[in-house]
Image 1: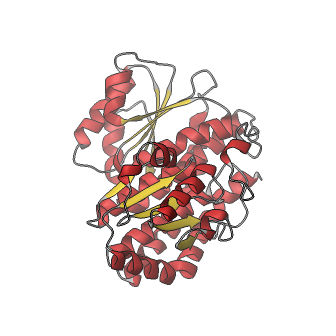
Image 2: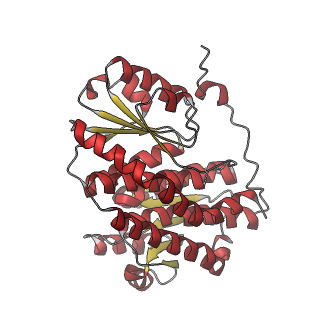
Length: 355
């Protein structure tokens, strides 16, 4: 069995472990953040971790009244210093805690007396060392491409948002229990759709389309296509997809829609139907509550029904189905998902504490 798949399967148990080990600690950090009464919360990360920052922004906006922004660390350091003030709190996502730009941002934040929360897998990393508050995700060792690191960071950020919203420990446990059960169910049942990637090839590649709280997962999906398959991929917000792809349609693109319940359900269905008329191969991942409508609107699409869960949990399930989609595609195309290409820019992205 490939390590990539083993790590996908570990996730349900790791979700429970993260709750057991860190729920009280995350509540304490939330209390400290509430006591500080920040003017705004700034969320950031590099690469896959930026997807976590985007999702955390959705969580905090949905559950609390805090003003939040999400920005890449390069922009915060080099272009948007005016966006940060001493009254802010920065939440940094960094699994290894060694990203060069993250460390430059932390240095700048310390100079300006801005509090830093670091969500990381390495509590001994430079990022953790120089942060004010640390949330460990307990992913253990992992091989690229990242799977459990991303979903555990997502869960940690959801638990933090729930604590900031003054949800009880019982409420958070109920949510985590549901995630544990439903993620195991999604992984187990994925064998039923593992052949859906049969028609994909390097020429056609993927187009991922999302909106709202599932768009951060679309951002993550693009990275996984490059890491696991070594192929290009496109990503769109759903309305952007409708405007750009209908002007210059690419029927060879294999289009993946992540669909959740929203006020503009009819518009979502219209756009997917239009994509089908462009002779595209389409996969739709959607909860049962909207999945049947998706099948009616786009009868030729391959539709994967997910459990009906809260939108907050659904975003984490979407991460897992994206991992599974890339794993099954790799198997079909005889690609080893455990050995992505060497990172050319490794030296330029890593922080050297001795410098």
